[in-house]
Amino acid sequence: MNFAKKLTVGAMAASLLATAACTTNPETGNRRLSNTGLGAILGTGAGYILGDIIGGRNSRTEQIIGAGIGGLAGAAVGRYMDQQEAELRRETAGTGVDVIRQGDDLILRMPSGITFAYNRYDIQPQFQSTLNEVANTLSQYNQTYIDIYGHTDSSGSDAYNQTLSERRAESVAGYLSARGVARARMATRGFGETQLLVNPERTEADRAANRRVEIKVVPFRAN
Image (cartoon, rainbow, N blue to C red):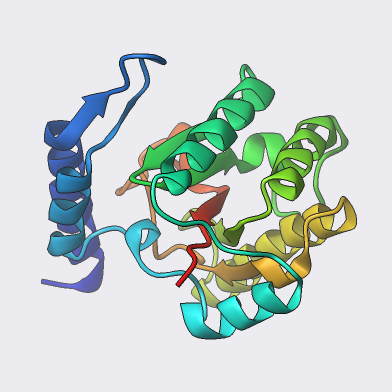
């Protein structure tokens, strides 16, 4: 089985597991993965989003502590992420940004149709107000790691798409940093066309879904 097929099979398996493992928050009505379901998905090896933070925790932890940020412990972790999730959902409602809860992690999935013009990596002016709100929340809830992932569709060469995805991730990181989010908390990675949400791409809508930036927010836990 080639790499693309493996990714597709893995994504299908993760999707089925996620559907089965979701629970509903009785207060908000939002569906999220249970801890049991999260472990099952991790066991499949599918889904880079569920992996460790970019660059490993040790080096990132040193940077965050160096920036004067303390860690979370015990039940405080869940409450902290619940509050942050609620803020981010309020700020991004109706903008096209998806807020996804996975265990205690949050994923903000931002389609490039609202963040970037085609083939560009400068953030579109009409999206800046939303990203300003996101930056404000991320700076207030500073006890987290932030990973920023860039993705493209499968059009164009692998090398071009890889570079474009990296530049888009860096563009978002730079924007957030300029608006008060400590750079020590952030890391970026471009995936090019290797992490397609829709595969194979049959329509322009499929390709648009694959062109995206994702912000992963992970609680910084005290040792």
